[in-house]
Length: 201
Length: 205
Image 1 (cartoon, each protein chain N blue to C red):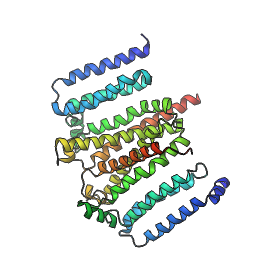
Image 2: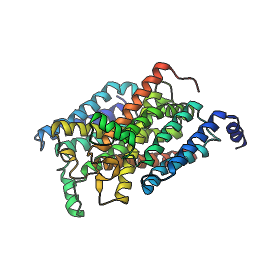
Image 3: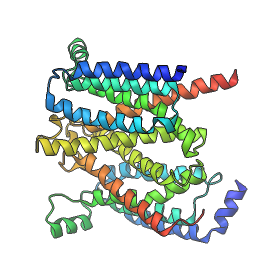
């Protein structure tokens, strides 16, 4: 078994074990199921395509970290995530910002594998791949906000943003997308700097 | 630069287009409903024109693309004149379909997707080297991303200009899902244009 395969199985095992632990008595079973629809689609799409995609170890690592963050968030319905509650008390914040952190992590962690796929398959030049990765992150983030609003209207009509994730923030959708964009920009800047350093060496 | 100048000098279509737009823009700059809002909306136009002009010597779009961009900016100029919420055509639609708000802004979000997918495809194909199979998807993603970016900007501007009004500020007209509906309009427009481009084929740029 080669190194790449071992890393892949290791990351899969960690995520799987954590998922099982988090699936035991989540704070709100209905919310947990909703959040996990996302995860099932994501992991399903991934396992179907991973042979053809040939992502790097670094990409798989990024994806696994994001999956872990989401598993933890889903267990606590995001709004009750203990670390976020602690930060809320400690820094005197208006709300539990763990969901926003996860949106930022989504941009930061997934911009990397997306750019890798763009460079490998789309024919995009190196310069444009940074922008297109950011565009995809922002597009997926916007798509997620639309889905979230539709689900909110279906499950709790009229309650608006407060039902799912909003926690009283009237700019919730925009702030979520902004967090994802900032995450993606940070990662792209990091990659651009690292690549320049390696090329100059 | 000389090459670009000669290209512009030879392109009668682009000259006429620019001329028509300038006349329309000047007419709509006279007594807008709200000068402050008009200026704010026109920042978008200034940025678009500056980007298009300053990159012209390196990259020229096809005339079809300039026509689509011109059309979109013309619709936007009308919206800006009437602060979007008070466009007469929007009131007419409101009465006709018994809606509870002026939907002209949503029409323009739809138009943004519909009219700008072709220009984005052209840009991604010629400048970014994107493959034909990836082109429709990446162009849609770009339209969607710009729409999301616009909603973020709108939220930031609203908080700076009128922090007291919150989400009730202008653009939303009291709709809590305004941002989501705007983005949906843009993407529906974008998908329709993408299908039309696929159906009727693209002229090789």
